[in-house]
Image (cartoon, rainbow, N blue to C red; front, side, top):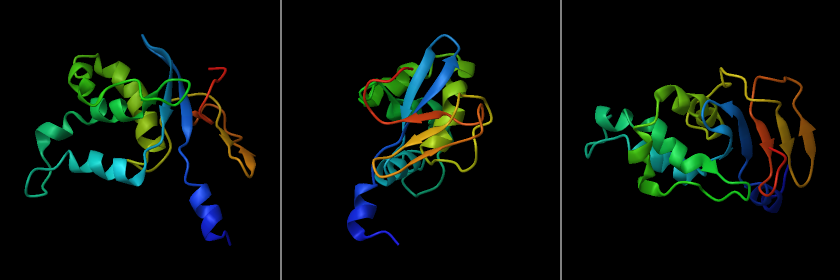
Length: 146
């Protein structure tokens, strides 16, 4: 069993590259913290805690604002940029959203569209996925060969 310190040290973000997004090329994404994930979920509820249908309609651009990052792991979009992303063609948003929602922990399962080979890189151990084309490529922050 891991020690407290080992568990807390492992609480780092994961990064992945969504390959060949139409019109965008390769897109790097990050996982969400638990607080960020719940903030996203809460943004889809009204004052009474019920699902706000108008907010749910913006779930794709809101998630992409939170997860799309540059090669150093810095967010590409500002918090309010989801409003401009609403005008991007849905098929482009969906190409990233399907993989990002699984990677960020907002839905469970495996992405339904190919995104490259999965490769987990951790500081203490390294594991490689053997199922090419089923998951995004996962890499640590910093320069990558994306």
